Length: 141
Image 1 (cartoon, rainbow, N blue to C red):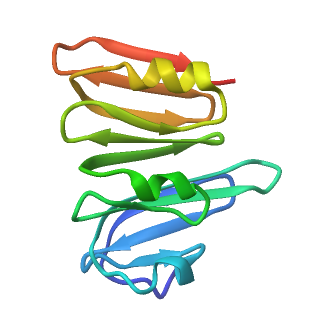
Image 2 (image 1 turned 135 degrees about the vertical axis):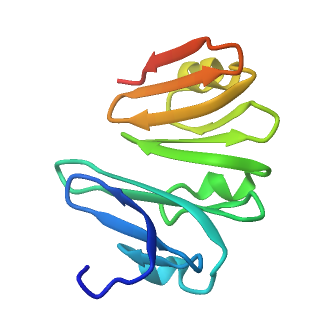
């Protein structure tokens, strides 16, 4: 980490750290997965205390990459990402939310949220705020 330069964002988990540089490169865990791209605008990461690591990176074209969540490659027009306990969410340009999670009821609930302007996914919560100031929250475990 001492050698990292021009870092504009970092994401950390229990024992994981990744960084996004000013020129759009990813540094840190699974850096090899992201190495052929230089157009990232946001990163997020999560690690369970028992060792599973998850990371995602948002590209400038609205596409999302992750070595863990294969489904995110189908997401389009994403403007913000967040990673939590076995879940990943992406805020779409139209204010909707895309989600990868194993529980269909959670996926259905989160996918129904509209007019979202900010979203967060940490540990066992997904929280969002709409353009009207409404707070959405769901416990995923």
